[in-house]
Length: 129
Picture 1 (cartoon, rainbow, N blue to C red):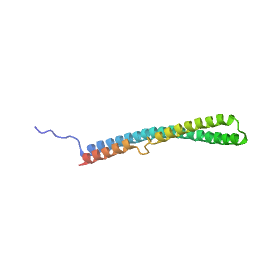
Picture 2 (picture 1 turned 135 degrees about the horizontal axis):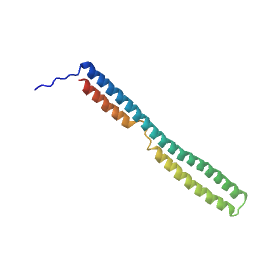
Picture 3 (picture 1 turned 90 degrees about the vertical axis):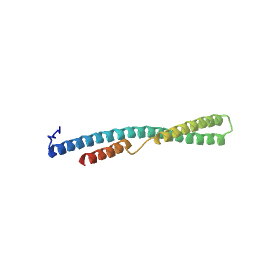
């Protein structure tokens, strides 16, 4: 027993168009979500890098202060300033290293969206054959 298809070509094309519109809207929402997530990661990494840069400025300032004290007078106060400078250098290195590591996890392209769009294009092609 053969089953007749009661849908017209216009109805089928209208359904395909509606599905394509829904898919495009979904892809736009996915792209927005991905870009927001990556921008958040980039902002956090930039904060770490900014912290490292500030620490580096303090390190240079303390090193210069240490040199001034060491040249001006030969008393133990410069040793304390040098110790603080070394500690600041360690903090600087840790902040810069962690910031760089976080930047390496940021992906500028919305890879999930691109893959999903490719799948959707293939689906549309298969529907129009």
